[in-house]
Image 1 (cartoon, helix red, strand yellow):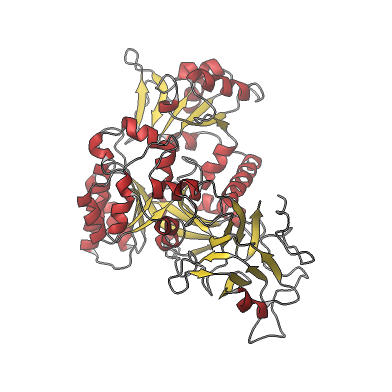
Image 2 (cartoon, helix red, strand yellow):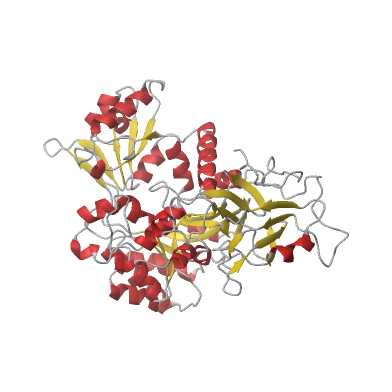
Length: 552
């Protein structure tokens, strides 16, 4: 990417060729041996509109950085004495500088896979015929027998208003096994060869909490599978190293281009193998955002047996996050049961871990609250910061109970923008009244953080901020306007609140001396532009650990 004209002052050193290497351009460590009392800065951002989100100093004009930390926040005159012979100076020309965005709930490996899969999202396909054409096009350039992955479809946005089936995917190709993933990540469709390869037949029992949709007359699977993504993926050949490298490179650039400097990987299937993969991409020199990696209950003992717990540094920019648990009601029954959930939550809680419980429907949210209340009654603990992920349908009685246990809510305001039309058309009125009640949760004193759930929706914090402020869908329809929050509250959801959700608010989320130098330069101040122009604000530069990781 090219630097914006006039962005850097002429004649100053440019370290963009090694954006994540914390050393000076002359190869030294950056230590200033001539100034011990007032060391020179490595990077100065001046002539800026700095929104610090620090109550002690909400606004500033300049930021000085040394190494990976913020050295000083103040006026242009304040930072001038910190300019040394090797200091890089960036004139921001009055543009906004804010703390780096943090996506508190996403799936980076799934995002990487989606970026190299056949795009079947609403912008690319509008009918099952379109799906068939796009998959057929990929099949024509793929050796016979190799898997084809397609992703992003949603039946609501297809002309037929239904899922495709195995026989329709067979029209795209019968020489390749095909997996077509639903936009939500909670369903997929296989063609006939895909079902055969995975051994899914009329005799195959449904895994607990899952559904294999079948032909009513013959009992044969029709290819549509619900809550079976992990089952399917574990039986498919993994992506090759070359495919993963390409996908992660694309994911990295996408995240950085949206100003994201930290992510929280919310996959319950994370394991030691996935840790090694994330560590590979987070190692020095690759400039991947910082990662907090959740783990599932299946891998809890393996991590705990080595003395690791929530917050442990795993190396290469990766730290251990919460224990992820998924509640679902695809079969009409709660899975896991309330009794099993109580035991799982209590076990992880007593082991000292933070919990992150996936709960969407109202009965799932209530079950999660029940389990957390039970765990805390058995082993009281302050400062646990147990989380509810999504918390999509949450009436006032559950909001109050969540406040009573000081839970942290991690939700997806961007869904209002991307899926608001569908919510208004399909969500029952009794649930719609309490859909994504961000305003109520905030007013009750709960810390509400935000994520994109990428690849379910694009990882754009600015879209989420606008949606939280306006409650407006992409179509212009308004979804429960009374649950809107202020611009500053919305901005905090993607910065300080997100850091709080992973016990890192003393390190990031605010622009303050001593904090990590993770910053974003924006084309405009999101707290000042018209509310319906927030999402069109441009990210101009993304800084991680004091180094320019990306710029427009």
